[in-house]
Length: 239
Image (cartoon, rainbow, N blue to C red; front, side, top):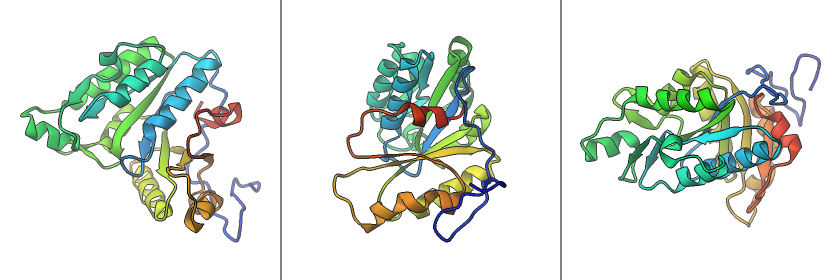
């Protein structure tokens, strides 16, 4: 970084467009986990964050406001949160494994955004740090004229972006980051998650250019099967 906060790597130098939120978590700052797509490892990353923070003595809990198809991810977060009741971690469950808006249509049920916000507020009143995991990607429809992005805005939290490391990841990261910034929210960092054992040229080079291209810190490149986060990584989280 130079004196203006501009990352210097390779031949590019992009300004950091989101103000830094990194800290020591002595007070606790909640944040919102989103992904470039479904299946990129949001729940895995959220679990590792919760387990890591709780090992340091922080009362961090997870919140999965929406689950579609099954509640497996919500159960993982409930366990990682010290055994919270499932319905507190996941207040809205839809049986169809499709986008929440579509699931609501199929089940003749409307998802009420106010219920999702109230669930977060209830957890935040009892715990100093809540890690909210969205459903699918940033623009997933939740209800008529309401998307995951709207929920993040209503909660007003800094955002942490999870991307699967593969060909096309840079495009997906830049598109999602642009959409986050267009909502006036801060992207506090990026996790690059290795989804497979095998590496190709794109996977090897992605991690070296993400900060150059985005101006956002790469919090961690998770290797396939990695089951922990170093304290250094935890210290870079919003706080």
